[in-house]
Image 1 (cartoon, one colour):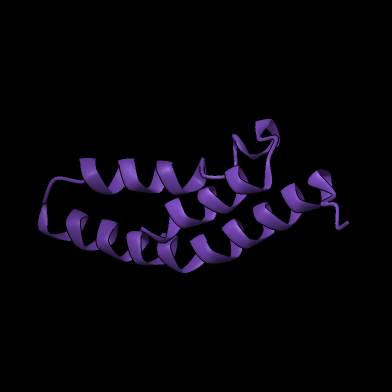
Image 2: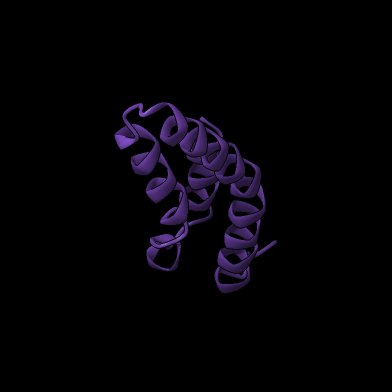
Length: 77
């Protein structure tokens, strides 16, 4: 029987989320700069940047492999 080390799986999940969000945050930074330059509303950009920064916050509370997999899927949406 194969068992999953949930502690290690959490660390792997956080590392993957951090790597995946890097380019997404960079894209939001560009959109933010452009919005500032044109005087456009930045509310949605700020909310998305916060969502991306906070994406790993609840990983430690997860208890199953399925929860961890679903968390990665959420970032990809």
